[in-house]
Image 1 (cartoon, one colour):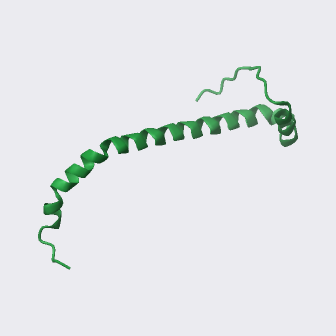
Image 2 (cartoon, helix red, strand yellow):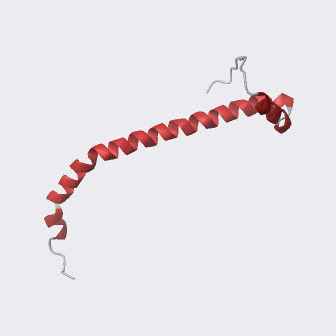
Length: 82
């Protein structure tokens, strides 16, 4: 990842700005905000991936069940009955 930075002008709620001021050193505020954005983007990407996987599993459920049923007899072959 590039360490090049750009300057941005953003707007946030007044209360949030006050909390940010209390929680951070003025010289570390940009790093704090950058870290928060990174965490949020990673969380969002993870949620999107989980949703895609969930949809994929649902789409393949019928196929997997049918395939499993085809081999059921073979799976139980030569097993002692309990």
